[in-house]
Amino acid sequence: MKILLISRYFPPEIGTAANLFYELATALSGRGHEVTVITNFPWYNLKEIPKKYIGKLFMRERLNEFMILRLALPVPTTHKLKLAVGHLTVPLTSAISGLFTKKPDVVYAYSPPLPMGLAGWLIKIFRDIPFVMGVQDLHPQCYIDQGVLRNPFLIRFLEGLERFCYRSATAITVHSEGNKRHIVEQKGALAEKVKVLNNWIDTDELQPLPRINDFAKEHGLAKKFVVGYAGTLGMSQGLLSVVDAAARLKDYREIEFFIVGDGIEKKRMIRRVKELGLQNIRFLPTQPKSTYPLVVASCDVGLVTLNAKVNTPVVPSKILSMMAAGRPVLASMPLDGDAPKLIQKSGCGICIGPEDPVGLAEQILKLAENPRKRQQFSESGRRFVVNEMSLNKVVGDLEELFEKSIWKHRQL
Image (tube, rainbow, N blue to C red):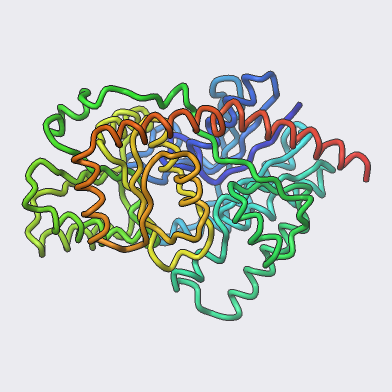
């Protein structure tokens, strides 16, 4: 099967989307498929852009057993606007690249950004192939929930674009039952087109490692009870409640909060830490993918947070990472979403309501005092993710969906 994958993000960029698509491309090519990835030139979450990408508008490179095509439009913009501008330019360049590749059997486009659905549709029309849309975040709803998107005309336009993408797709993947209900009941997607496909995690790469490791020693974590957070420090995470929880535990010298990542909320968090005079919380920038397993292994408890405004049934990928690494999860988020259901079903940890520093502090103390319970959460989470959410299992399900989509398209 010749498979075309389209994503705005891809390594050497650092982040969930980049990692997911790299793992998907590697797994599919490892199964004997001819895989081509169309993506952007790297910049996101990178301190330094590799020299081979600088000053180029087009590039073709081979990685492992698959091909990568990169095409860029030279649009002058500031760094702050680059993310927003790219939401428009990258789908366009992706569609152009897709028209000049060797004809694939199927195209799989990753959203967000939402306009990537337009790229998939254009390739479907001009190459006469099925288009499968992978919906990771529910756009524009997540921006509406956070109050970032308020203009009623823009909201109607983006919701119209969303519905168009769902109608145009041969099939749609979402990562939870709640997401499926949302796009079927509220956005009009046909239920028979939507398949729930769990986000995958490479359980061979991310395995339980010793708590006392080189990373823990380097950062003075070996003799601490470490409450760790590794990921985006964004507007939807409600991370100021974590700082406030640390303030409530400041007299427990053995407990340390360790925050790894970057995002728009980081400055506010650091400012709050300074205002409160806290010594039990530290920050590190986003770490390379190769270091991430040691970051997770250095935690006694892994934090996953969402603020009270999150109404979409999102399942943060951090939960899967903690489960694969055999670390107990402590989540603070709206309790009616799909993530709390996953935590309960898998037995990987505890979930409390959103933005609750008192509750967070209480649960951290309970976990610190109960190593047997932590071990139980660790073992249950690892077992569940290996059986239900491993890379091999989910990619096999996606491979089957591609085959069905190709057959369906040929019947039209």
